Length: 100
Figure 1 (tube, rainbow, N blue to C red):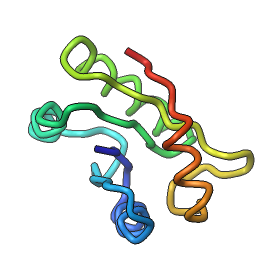
Figure 2 (cartoon, rainbow, N blue to C red):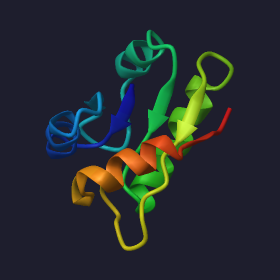
Figure 3 (cartoon, rainbow, N blue to C red):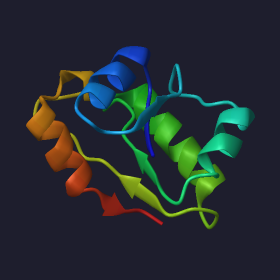
């Protein structure tokens, strides 16, 4: 499952054929973390800004050792999953590196 921040990101990535869930912000709740742990692996694609970096760090600290975590790197000049084209989104997920 791919974790993104917002509803627009979710809709766009599902349109692209990429399963995404929206955290509705960069700071997920404990209930959201519990749900993410139900997946075989989690891809983190939070916005490439300060809030997204903090949210990614927070999620890593809660998920590490419990589920494989992959970091999705955005193409140059893109700061939000919703800004990516279909090809860019698929390439970013395919190239994601395992964090833990």
